[in-house]
Picture 1 (cartoon, helix red, strand yellow):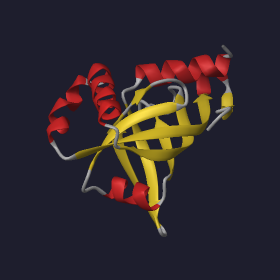
Picture 2 (cartoon, helix red, strand yellow; picture 1 turned 30 degrees about the horizontal axis):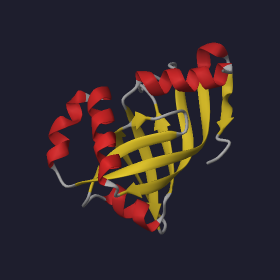
Picture 3 (cartoon, helix red, strand yellow; picture 1 turned 45 degrees about the vertical axis):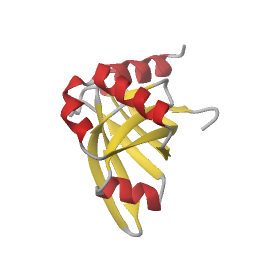
Picture 4 (cartoon, one colour; picture 1 turned 120 degrees about the vertical axis):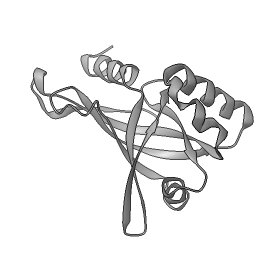
Length: 144
């Protein structure tokens, strides 16, 4: 595993939430949400069914995200992905289980009307100021 792959894996494993940027027409939108990773390039999320984020994804599945602690000197990720709606009930349950294991505080959200989504990450840019990674180091998916 390369140094960049290890850093991406470390950041994904250590942080439970991200900021997801979506757009519909010429109106951008950013929202926070919890995620669980099933590898370096696949993330699962749950979104409220009546929210702007999901409406935007239905109109335009191209999304961007930031995985960060909020500390500008801590390592963080920026990425681009394709968002897929997940309707298979077994896969929705797996997503819920993974999210509960990673972020137990999401439990009250599970009683709301929700939609599971899968983010197929095209690339990550890992930035680590303490390592001198400015600009960040790129890690591209081989099969996005």
